[in-house]
Each structure stands twice: as C-alpha cells, then as structure tokens.
Length: 433
Image 1 (tube, rainbow, N blue to C red):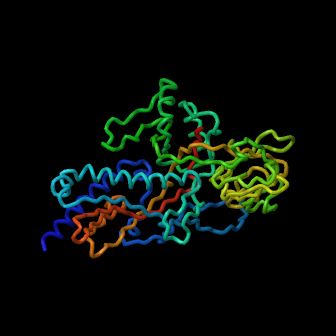
Image 2 (image 1 turned 120 degrees about the vertical axis):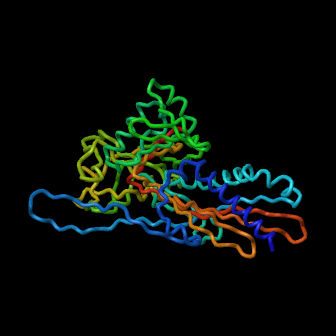
Image 3 (image 1 turned 30 degrees about the vertical axis):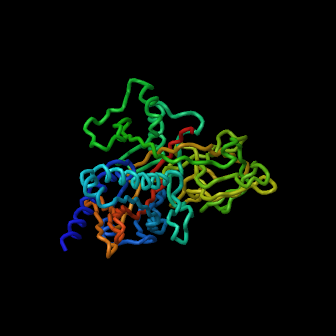
C-alpha cells in the first residue's frame, strides 16, 4: 500500500515544479489578470464560462436640465475553450536510475512545452482572439472574435525600431484614454537590438530578475516593457497586402447610433480573400472635401487627435462589383449616446487603408489580459494531483499510469484554460514581417 502513496508524492512534486516553471517562463501567463480564484479552485470542464464586468460608460450634458440615460452594465464572457497536454514515458529501470535524479530537467522541459502552447494562445488575443483547439468541442476551430485591441500603432511596412516611436505609441494610446495603471508593452525579441541601439536612452534593465524571467526589459516612457519570441503573426487579406484604398459606400445604421457593418468599393472583383478576421483598418485624412475622422476619448467623449481605426471581425470576399462588406469593432457611433466615439458622421466617399500582414506586439494597461485555468478532476484509478498556485489561481494537473506487465510508466501534464483581452485597454503594435 505504500507504493502508490510514494508515486503520488512524486507526482505532486513534479506538478509543483512544473507550475513554477510555467508561471515564470512566459510573459503573458505571468502578466495576465488571474482574478478568478473562486472559479479556478473548483474542478472545471471545457466550455465552462465565467462572466465579469468592466467599467460602465456615461455621457455628460451641458446645463442643469436633466437628460435621463440608462445605466448599462458592460460584461465580458471568458470561456475555458482550450486544452493541452504533454506526456513522457519511461520503463522502470529508467525511472529508478535516471528519472528521479532529473525531476527538475524533465519537469522544466514538459512545462516549457505546455507553457509555450498556452502562451501562444493567450497572445493571439492581440490579433482578435483565439481558435478553439479541442477536437471534442462542437465549436472546434472557430475563432472567438470578442477579444483584442481595435487600435494600432505602425503601418506594417516601416519598422518600429526607436525609443521615439515607442514614446509616440504610448502618447497615442493615452491620448485616446486608457486605464492609468499597469502600463505594459510586449515587443518582438528580434526588434530589441535595433531599439536599444537607436539612442542613448536605453531600457533600465532589471538586474534582479528571477531566473526564468528573461523577458523583462525595464521601464521607459512610464511603461514597463517586455519581450517575447511567441508573439502572433496576422495574415492579412489581399486588400491589405496590395495596399488597396477602399471607399465607403454605406453602413448598416444611417442614424449613427450603432454602426457595426461597413460596405466599401475598390476591392478586386470576386476576390474571396479580400478581408480577413483580425485585419486592421484606418480612415484616411484629406479625402476631397470630406472632414477628417477623429476618435473621441473613451471617457469624456472629447475629440482627440487620433484617427479612427477598427478591427475586422470576419472573413469576407468581394462581390462581382468589387464591393466588400464586413463587421467591425468597435461600433462606430456619432449619435449622442454613451458609446459616441466619432467626431463627425460617416459619409460615403470616405476612404480606408487596411494593414498588410505583420507581427503583432501589444501596449496595454489596467491588466486587460484575463486568464482562467480551473482545476481538472482526479483521474481515478490513476494517481493524479492538480497543483494550483495560491496567488494566481493557475492550475496544472499531473497524473501517472502504468501498463500492467509491459514495464511502462506514463506521466501526463495537462490543463484547460480560457483567455480574453478587454479591447479598449489595448493597442496593437505593428511590426513588418
């Protein structure tokens, strides 16, 4: 009876070591907001959802005459739609004479592989959400488009390679309005040498990093900067790749109360790949006699200096006339209500450019990247343990099984998770591929 207990202790020891590596090695896992401790403490399943609220919005009116307006609770749903596992197997002789002496090495390798999958999936929120990766899920392969920034800095052609550009990105981000705490940027690792070499102002590197936190760069322009080699690449549609200018034809709401769909002319006739989900667009200035579009600030609804940008929510092709229709986020609103974000109404003839394919970094504040990792249940009769970080709530399950009479031990590390990013508190940083 003592042997299973010893094995369980080994599994628990492995799980603790694995979890420590996974939490410290990756910037998105470490930096994400893991506030759902009660949700994470109970055993969860794929498809489990938690709802959390974000800041409500109001509109102020001149004078003392009261204008009634509704109080609208703004909520975000986070669904545990992702799952992954890493296995390792040994025979009894390997385990006795080799494996037990290398717990940290095997655990580190397994946790890094598992963590890399989770990290890449979380970072995909930068480019409009993640695809459900569990083949058993009825929505397998579907893109979850309710996440990710709709603003961006960079054009996908010219590199972001200087401190001046990073400072300008921060200025643009704050000009629109964003949470004032925990300002953080994540940059592609390959761009760091050119940025650091661009001037005398260099990152004030943190020399006391934990062993695995080599992604920490330091502070600049009031922002904490980090780096990653797992940032996503967005593959644009042909409109973006060809630098085509689109001309606005119509919207789904002429009143301007909630424009969520735009129709443009100018795409290639019958092009089935014209627009891709996650494409980013910007309205152009100085188009004939039409006014320049500007965002109003998120809070206060004051006209900012920021051009109007949007994120495309769906793949769409052009028709036989070269017209293409797609949904956008955020809703574009010029009517006077809580969500008003345009300085003037949209008009036919306004023009838009779509970004080409690019690698996507991010600038964010207010801990807008949310991660939930509920516990997985025990897999009886296999010896198993789920280790949960007491501070973050992140969980990893580690279980053990052996084939009767075949001298094989199999160790499995697995977890489920869901992630999302509150879109108004992020900005995509656009780097050429």
